[in-house]
Image 1 (cartoon, helix red, strand yellow):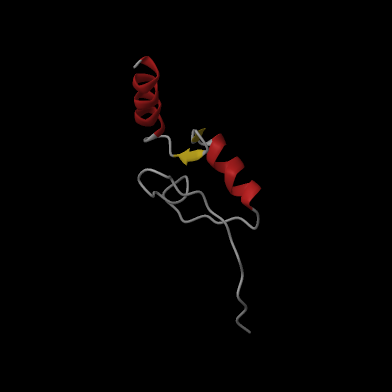
Image 2: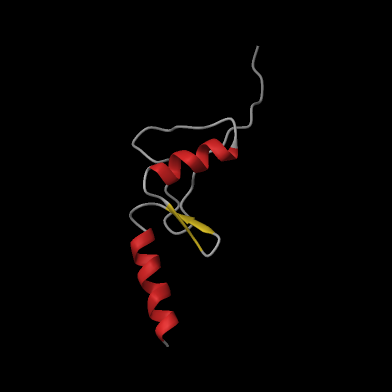
Length: 68
C-alpha cells in the first residue's frame, strides 16, 4: 500500500537549504525538525529560520540596521 504522509524539515528562509546535514531528514512533527535545526546551529532571527551559514550574515545586517 502507498499512503500519503506529512513530514517536516527545516528550510532556511534565506538560501532555501533544506535539512541540517548532507542527508535528507524529515520529522513527523514541526517541533522535531526545529529542535534538530537549533541543535545544529540554526537560528531564529525576527521570526525567520536561518541555517548556520546564513544566520551570521543576517545577524550582521540586522546589527547594521539597528545602528542607523
